[in-house]
Image (cartoon, rainbow, N blue to C red; front, side, top):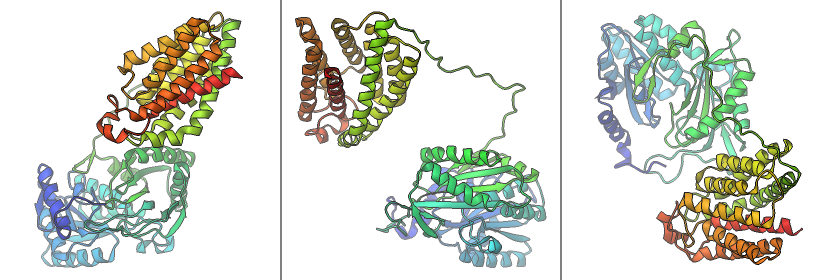
Length: 569
């Protein structure tokens, strides 16, 4: 929800004042909105866009070279008045006429229409192009009744580029109409938006559902559907737009994957990967796609896909440079004469084949990794819950990603007859690469140190294993700097290694020695509940973590018990 405001009734005016103060080199505030700080060339067409607030960067953020000459800014989700529309147009006009461009909403049509009549009466040639891109808002045979959503941007971009080229008002109007006719959008919402000062969203989406066919003024979708994953959402968006592909359309499209406020960039990039695949499979070439927030709706959790089917002129205008507070496009650099040869960033490690005893040990290591994989997946949710008490709750997810990658790498090395050292080293590197974060790198460095002591020749006896265990502990504490009592995985790892190496030194049965060591590690991990963290991300919330064991220590102890159980079979 919108939490920062002074007087909710003056939110639009207050945000516009701050916006003007932030971008004085781009825009100047005038009654009713903003215009470019640098005047247009004499007789350049002034493209004036606008609508209610709550959609940034539309509309005020799109004022700048190659885009709009001015933006009329109304209250949140409310049409600006006719006086505001007239005021901004008069301030933007450079003698070449004014093109109003806005979404197809009744209030906007009436107020901009009244302003257009007054401007024409004053001798200023003024035209209007309505954006009608939302395929969910009316059937194809009633295209003129559709509302404007994120397709606003493609039409504004084309009109602004055509005006920047120096085309006259007739040609700029024609360009905008051509862009609108070629532009189609469709969206999905996951949660509604909340007005400043309100205590409830304008609409809600039932749990486990998503709203199909959103508006940008807080309107609910036209229907609810079961929540789907990113590949399915991509398919829904793409299929709906391809169903309206114009008869004479080519294979080149401009595309916008638009977030509406609370669906943020990494989610959008993930979704775009699936959308790009689907568009390519449909035989389409995407020209300079835009993934981000261009037409928002306060804090709505939603996304929309826009396609504009390109011809030669539309592609030129779409790709033309632009510089505004909310959007910048630089010219593309010239393509190199020959494709750049990019070497592999990291060459795959050469597999060292082991002798028969070492291959046997490698098989045991692989079996242990598979057992860890099952145990960690079963415990992932609980490890995440414990980690969330004073951390970010991702420990279970990180451990499962790490062990999954380790098993894949170990299986690949094992298929090539790798020795124990080579197989476990490959698993360690994969664990660190995929798990990421502190625990990922510590598990990677620890397993790699253990691997070096196992070797690729000869059997792995108890002494060799104990030396490797000590090397793993030394590597982890050297890299991470933790010691027992700091409430980290070292609180479980140190007693595990100490007890196991002591048992081996006494000549105890190694399997029994490791079982006892795993029990000590488990007791030590549980005892971390009484500790205050002195290192890592839990330290800033140290008091909150008292009473809860450390997730890293618990997961290490779980792994130790799992290996002990496997060895005892």
